[in-house]
Amino acid sequence: MNRTRIQIAKADIVKHFDQLPRHALKLKEIRTILASQRAFWRLAQSTTAERFIDFLKEHAKLREVEFPFPQRAERCYVWGDVPLLSILLSLRKDLYFSHYTAVRLHGLTEQSPTTIYITDERSSGGSEQREQVKLGQAEIDQAFSRAPRVSNNWVEHAGKKIYLLNGAHTGHLGIVTERVTDEGGQEVFARLTNLERTLIDITVRPVYAGGVFEVAKAFELAKDRVSINRLVAMLRKLNFSYPYHQAIGYYLERAAYKPSQIDLIRRLPIEHDFYLMHEMGETSYIKQWRLSVPSGF
Image (cartoon, rainbow, N blue to C red; front, top):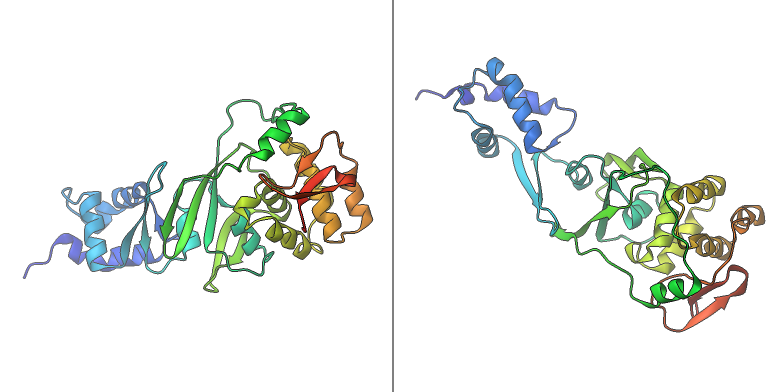
């Protein structure tokens, strides 16, 4: 039986894909590979990207993975065995792991979260300086009396709940690429929030970090590794409208950080009463931080 050109070229195609630096690919990347290698592989012009993909799915180790996020479905192609973390980072340019996922990757939890958080940061619409909106006490009280906003942009995949969050523009402040270990023990190069940015993010959104007890545990486990100087510098750049530094100061005190570290937070102005989380019910008031926390916390 006569073999087709693509069947004849199969060994070379497989070798090419095996040698790629990344094995999670978007359709556009596969189109580029096909266009650049078509002549070398002597493939007919009738071999479209779709036919090429279908052949590799049937006769090699390419598979298609879909993530039907409500805001915009994502699809990628995986060559062989690729860790889920690597697949997720390939879905869009400049994604990074954040919140509870960054907490786990930094070793700041004793739990095994079944939810994965990825952030897609908005590109700048204007000035690099984040404008702070001045809020009064009544506005702060009203905002924190309500339930927190929670994204509905998530999918179930491989037993995980995966959130793709729309992040505010920060110029990718505190985003690092590090070698981390996934749940299966595989080493993965991943983009994620660094230690300081992670602690800030989970203070702001404890609902994306397993709740305030998990946030408190993360501060406790970060104690010997975090730089409070760096954290304060980052807070200044992020320029939040809400006084999240009061919550951070409380977490530091609760985890028995050094007085010199806590003093770095105390230097920031404390002008309003604030809340550790939204919609708390019964609360206790921490006078030195002007902070309401859940009763018994």
